[in-house]
Amino acid sequence: MKPWPYPRWIAHRGAGKLAPENTLAAFRLGAEHGYRMFECDAKLSADGVVFLMHDATLERTTNGHGTGSEHTWHALSQLDAGGWHSRRHAGEPLPSLQALARFCLANRYLLNIEIKPTPGTERQTGQVVAEQAAAWWTHADTPPLLTSFKPDALAGAQAAAPDLPRGLLLDSLWEGWMETAQQLGCVAIVCNYALWDTSTVAQVHTAGMRCLSYTVNDEWAAERLIDLGTDGIITDRVDLFSPAE
Image (cartoon, rainbow, N blue to C red):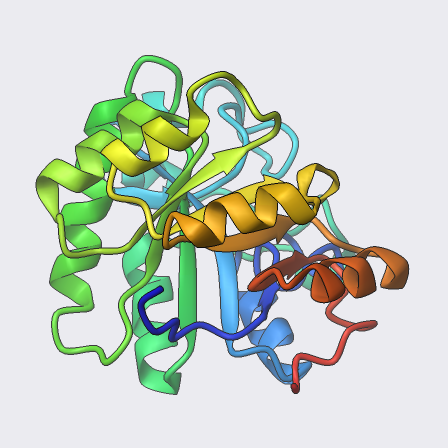
């Protein structure tokens, strides 16, 4: 396998559930807990700006309404993305991926960008995320890891910025997943942590890829994954797990 520049521990959506997910407040809090790599969700606004949000719709994590991709970035940037979480974070804005890139590059933090396309925009979202990430991380020692559940999104990323590392996200071991990952030039498989066993870890490592897991919030699960020889753990529990190895 090629050298792996990323740490084992990755903070899910910035700081798990301790701060409003996918906001700069969350990434700052994750950093305060010692994490130096973060996972985020990226999608496209109506005018082609990459912004951070997990859901297709705005209601759960903002005071907005409707599908996020149907709004311009200007409209999205005016939303409150923190008030749903706590009074402390009321008024926290939605960040663009560019804003997070500036934060990570200024502090030498690493990033796993999950390409989270609105249905129907898979390839376009993968392409734009990869193009923008390649531009912003041009001079970085370690590029972001681009991952997605959607092979079409990873294909778009591969076409736009083939040198950026890619990983296939899996919530089940569907037929042909390994062949798909190899065709997409993936460097990692990112699984629901319950899917890993000795055989699957060996299969992925033999293929020259790394084994990552989401979302691991219990000590017993983390210990099992470490014992299996997996390479990365994405967690909400930045307050429980020390990222120091």
